[in-house]
Every structure is written in C-alpha cells, then in structure tokens.
Amino acid sequence: MIIAGANSEKYDYIKLLKYLLWLFVLVTIADSIQKLSLGEKVFWGHKQTFYNNYVIFKTSFKHLVDGVNLYGQYNEEYGDYYKYSPTFAALMMPFYYLPDWIGLVVWDLLNCILLYYGILHLPRLTAKSKFFILSFSFIELLTSLQNSQSNAMIAGLLLLAFVCMEKEKFPLATLLIMICFYIKLTGILACVLFLFYDKKLKFILWSAFWFVVLGAIPLVFTDLQTLISQYKNWGILLADDHSQSHGISVLGIISSWFSVEPSKTIVLVSGIFLFLLPLLKIQRFRDFDYRLLYLCSLLIWIVIFNHKAESPSYIVAIVPCAIWYISGVKNKWNLGLIILAFILTSLSPTDLFPKPIRLNYVIPYSLKALPAVLIWIMIGYELMMGRK
Image 1 (cartoon, rainbow, N blue to C red):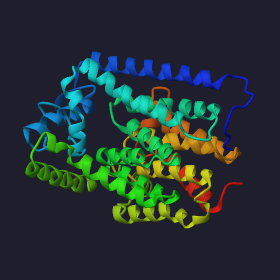
Image 2: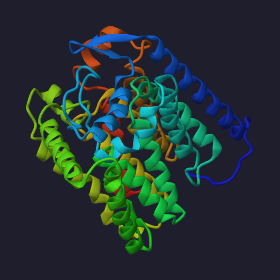
Image 3: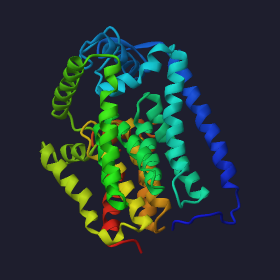
Image 4: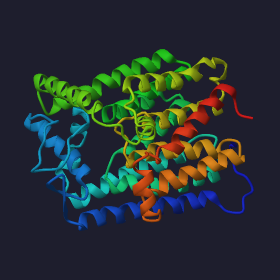
C-alpha cells in the first residue's frame, strides 16, 4: 500500500517528477499568456478580461486602502463580487502593483507550484505514487488555472499543512491552515487534524496566534473601524451567498436528481456528522494510513458540501481521490471509481468530452460531483472499518 523508500522500477520516477514540474510550469505560463492575449469578453452584460478572478483579487487591495466596501459591485472594474476576507485583500498588495503580464503569471505559478510541492512532500509515498497523483490531477489543475482561481493554492497549502503536522512543525502548519481560512472559510476544518498529534495545546495556541495576526494585517492599510465594517460586510455577503445556489455538490445532486429543494442546513449537518464520525476510532490515530485517509476525506468534503462549488473547485477534490486510490487496495471497484472520476470529474469540462452529453447530462445533473461523492463515502467506510 504505502511504501517509503525507493523500489526497483522500470522508470526513474524521481527524474520524471522533475520533468513533470517543468511541464506544469510551462503549461501554466502558456495558459497565462493565452488569457492575456484574448482581450475582453462580455459576461453578465459587462466587459471583463479572461482572467476576471485575478482582477477581482488584485483590485480588492485598492478597495481596502480606499476604505470602500470590499463586497460591493464594481462593474467598471470587473464582473461578479469579491468574496474573500479583508486579510486576503491585504495579501494581494504585491499583485496590485505588478502589471498584469507579470502578476497573472506569478499568481498562476504560485497556485501550480504550491500544489506540486504539497503532493511532492507527502510522506511515506513512493515517487511512483506521487507521479501518478500529479499526472492524474493535471487536467483538473489546468481547469482551475484557466479560471485564475485560488483552488490549487488551497489544496497545496492544506497538503503542506498536513506535511508539517507529520513533522510536528506546528507553528508553520497552523499558519498555513489560517491562511486557507482567510481565503476560504472551509479551510478552518483542517484544524480537526490536531486531534491526531501530541502537543495539542501548542497547536491551539499557535492557531489562535495566527488567527489574530492574520486577521489584523489589514490594519496596516486601513483603520480599525473600517476593518470591522469590512468584516461585517463579508458576513452579510456570505449569509446571502448561502441561500442562492446549490453548486456542483451533494446539494446539486439531490436537487437535480430528485427535483426537490433540499434543506441546506440538514445536508450540511449530516455531512459534518459523517465527516466527524470516523474520529470515534481513537485507537487508529497513530496509524499513518488512517491520518492520510482522513486528510483525503477532509479535502473532498470541503468541495462536495460547498453550495458554491464550481468546476474549477474540483482540483481540491481530485487530488485526494488520486491519493486514496494509489495508497489503497487495487480491486475492480476502486479502479472503476477512479476511472469514473477521471472521465466525469476531470474530462467532462474539456473539449475531449462529447459536448451533447456534457450539456444535457453532466451539467444539469451535477455529474462532475458524483465520483467524488462516491469516493468520499468509500473513504468513510475504510476509515470506520479499515482497509483489507
């Protein structure tokens, strides 16, 4: 299953991993150049670039400094709304001052490289296993990069946080988790991993420290009263955002398959219960295979139970699907699930997938989410019952 060290392999996977890094970097740069060269498009009745998300991110810094509502509508500057924390807006300062032809490339490379090194540094996995995980995730990574989103960064930071916890580097691990929290709230769920390790008080104290420090960073650029107002506006946006869609998620599957309006609260509470249930297996906390599986469960959960999950969000879920498969039992059922994940989750948004099937079945019925949901259920079973 999980093997440390080198095996006698037909290929030099350590060297192949280095080649794969260069492939990731070159494709990322090419994708950034393509987006820069496409000019503008009309979306939602407004002109915007093909890297609109990046424009939203970097412009948030200007709005923070100007003291205007970060979460207002600014159609002259970009489409959609800014939905991240004031802290994230402050951290985007370097990108605001960079020209787009540099900043966009750096932003996309940051996402790509954090994910690559998060996977590369996973402990107790062979180079061959890591090569599989990276290769399997490549198409989904490209989907995320084409939208200039932060999902690959989230996945990479959470993987690196797990790596740091395995090495008992709790100050760095908690910093990475809190950065994720201030980008996307669901990142805070990674704090549950502290239950698996000693020095729990140290973990809690460092988490509290970074929570305060990162939350106060915007004070460098704005005053306290304005910052409090920004956090209130963020809460209002998130509360309103919660009621508006189902996303490509468990909610989307229930709604489209059964033509019912599911209670988001009931679905979320049920998901949290099932996510926490394996923690009853306290005797397995010192088992690395259990901890790795729980990390996979966490990463998939924050996507499939996200009512705003989009196609680019699934880079966060496809990586743990690959980790689950390569580190587990190789049987026909597991093979079928991972193939289904490759076809429905990774390939379905691409031009390699038949367009009529995508438009008539995959999108309307949230089929992109289905393999991740099935694999998450399988992971839950293995966490409770153990692997053969």
